[in-house]
Image 1 (cartoon, each protein chain N blue to C red):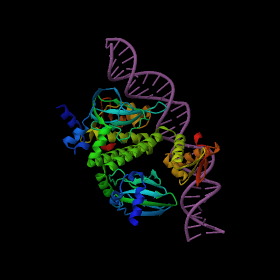
Image 2: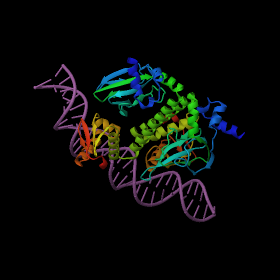
Image 3: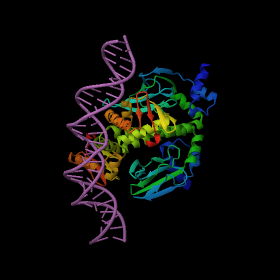
Image 4: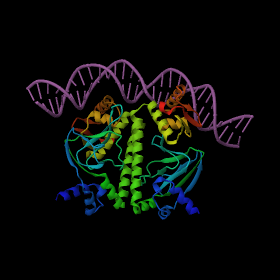
Length: 225
Length: 225
DNA sequence: GGCTAAGTGTAAATTAGCCGACATTTTGCT
DNA sequence: AGCAAAATGTCGGCTAATTTACACTTAGCC
């Protein structure tokens, strides 16, 4: 029964849908079934054996600290996303941690070595996985290209559009997004100062493009963004 | 004899070193053995069948043009690098082309579909390739992180350090780099205006950190960067 | 309920670096 | 050799956005 549960947890991810029950069982040394609640910090780099994680519920942000002590948001992980050492290479240079944004999260994980074994035995999965990593890379490239060539305003608009598309609930042209980010988070994601972000958000509210509060963000007409 | 040549061209790349002769022969529909000289522009996206390319000799830059008509340098490809649709996903949205920087280049290519078949039959290669793509992603992330959090000066220094490490010839603490980039190229790579880049380079020359000309860049003491 | 910390709002001073404009130098071509 | 085009060098004005600084509001906790 417990085994079955683990099976389904993985099966849920589109990457693993092609695998048979027995193939997934191979991976099912899903040792960690972790639950955590808002604000908690989860260390996963350099901690112990290299793992790949799957976020089953909630939202977390991946934060890294550079040499000067500056916090940078590396990634926002949403329900269903894989994270951790996706490149299958451990590097313990970078100090990263995850912070829980939503009320609670469920994370499961498996060992990188187990995953590698599985890839070796399932070329089709290996190919899918390569494409998956490739897609991630493409996304990263794209978002960075935005960061570099556009100004803060455009970046905010783009970010909101992306967020709305990924997680927003649309009724007509109105999109409602559950807001689990602070303005500071948003500022960091679009790489600007908090103050600039606030100014832009308020400006959007004045122009009736947005309805912002701590719980949710309502975009009255997504086509106007 | 001709077949053998192709074989060695691929064999040279560390990714393919584990493969046997017959395995590589599978890939050896290396249709394109392209030669080109300085300034030439090579289109490879959207052109015909999706391919993966291997630069055997010389240097090229990958340039993309965005909606506003702005040129952006996406990547600098050096001898031995793979490029093209490394993610194994064709997207014909982006308009990209390659421009030859060195006096002459030799490029060979193989079909993406052939490569996929090979990956499916060689799990070990598939795993290596996945790690290879992962490493690429890590590099991309790193360089972008630099672009965003540091100022133009730091970015230039970092770029020079990286370049020196990759291609420089070191004698003692002195590093000499063959300079196949224009100042405009450098400016674009570190994401600043040409004018700012020039100012910084000249400033470095005054401080004796650098010796710049169109043919080569000499860094008298790499540890001082 | 009241206190503290985190989050939000606003404004002014300061600055990095973009942009336009132009002069000079070098390269490649016929 | 001579010309055009590309590459390099230099200068201020301009502006977006960071920084500093402070007041207000909300959330969470004892």
